Amino acid sequence: MLKKVTDLTKKALISAFGFLLVTVVFSQEIPSDEAVIAAGEATFKANCTQCHQIHKKVIGPALAGVYERRSIEWLNAWIRNSQALIASGDEDAIAIYEEYNRTQMTAYPFDDNQIMELLAYIQAETIKGPPVEEVAVAATGTAEGDSVSSSYLTAVIIILVVVLVLALIALVIAVNTLTKYLKEKKDLGEEEEELVNQSFDLMATLKSNSFLGLVVFVFTLIVLKTLIDGAFTIGVQTGYQPTQPIAFSHKIHAGQYEIDCQYCHTGVRKSKSANIPSPNICMNCHTQVKTESEEIQKIYAAIDYDPSTQTYGTNTKPIEWVRIHNLPDLAYFNHSQHVDVAEIECQTCHGPIEEMEVVYQYSNLTMGWCINCHRETDVNTKGNEYYNKLVKLHSERSKEPMKVEDIGGLECAKCHY
Image (cartoon, rainbow, N blue to C red; front, side, top):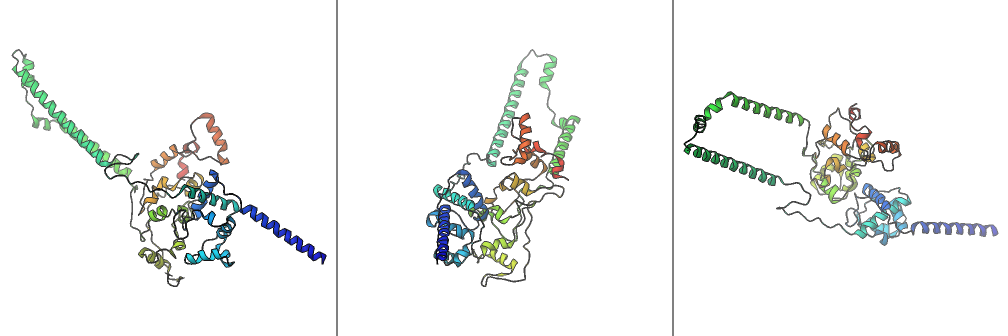
């Protein structure tokens, strides 16, 4: 009997200790450190933006103030495995599941620190409040920092031409006036009188060898410049914007709903290519969103999906996307090196992708363009011990930041081997 009491006492102590430990872990205050918030933002954008926004309901609920509506312990269980929490009979979990059309949330094996980082980011964005809509620039003006409009430059050129023509007319009038004055003088010498009385023969000038040589020279320069400019545009597709088989809008997905590029282009951090998203990635959202859309129906047809029964068939067919960005075969480019190691944003090369209804080639992607980038870009050495010795050697001979060209970024074999 005493042994049973002792065992029960031990179990009670262990349970109490476990409860105390959970309470200590999940009752801690949400951190407000900038580094923690930044880490939470990265995690949020890489995993959550396809279904959630902070201040707006999307596929899932808006997350502003979620740490006040639910306990951190409950949020931890929900994020890690929402289906297990629903299966346990939790009333709040079941209510959310039913409210959002029984959409299953992906289970994320985050540790406690990652969840606190997420909550820190959500708390910071909640305090900051919803974003203020940008004020549109008036059609008659330009935004501060914008480049001068083409119509303004055209007006400047027209004004300059008018000024030059007026100057030429003034010069002709001055010459005629001076000639008339000299003709009225009586004491001109023979040579001076011959100079004043000489007449301009336009046809003789046009037929002269000097004029013909000048015309041939100018014509040759224009032809050569045209040929050279044309040669430099071979293979350059800046502005190329083909019609795609499905009207996918980056403006809606990456802009309005702030879905991180890496959610769809899964290879961008770990491989040479960013890869074309699989239709299965589309279906993570579009089993629930806009099932009546004609473009969504094209996805359903490609993967042989029946939205009424939520079943898949076997009559699948590929979506024939049209490639937009295409480097020549002789050039090697690695996305992971630039995105994961150098932490270069997608917009650096692809432009304001979040504003594009239909994607087009923003940069010319020429060799000169790449070389200029390597000459101007600082190497991201922060927190990377690989660069410690290089940084030390560079600092001994230069006070300027270490550029990509300083670590071999202009070597031919980097891109051609």
